[in-house]
Length: 142
Image (tube, rainbow, N blue to C red):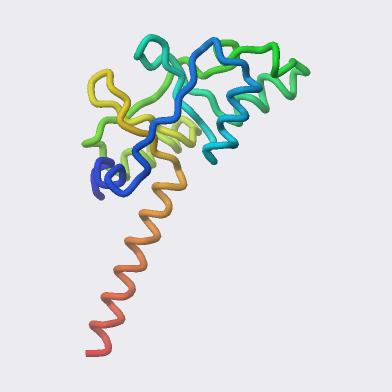
């Protein structure tokens, strides 16, 4: 399987982020505006967490908290599993499966280069399979 850096080349390179002091309501608005399910939480240029729609559902909505009064720091995932640009797509799939997560920030040292989602990996696998099928079909026809 290919390294994640190849997926990042064809991926939106914008790293969507919020600070820990952002309200959950504002973070949800940004998730909606950006059309993503998770964002990195940065504090003074350092990755300190990840906030997702799932965090909101489980830690705010189901507990009856107010999203306009709750901050991202109160609900974010602090133990963020990350990968490097050299990590293979299969290893990423394995990490996501093992830890039951849907998003992996890609770091080069302390710098966040991007975020890979389970959807990105699935789209890549499907594209690879379609290419293989096409090549086999062409081979059979000749």
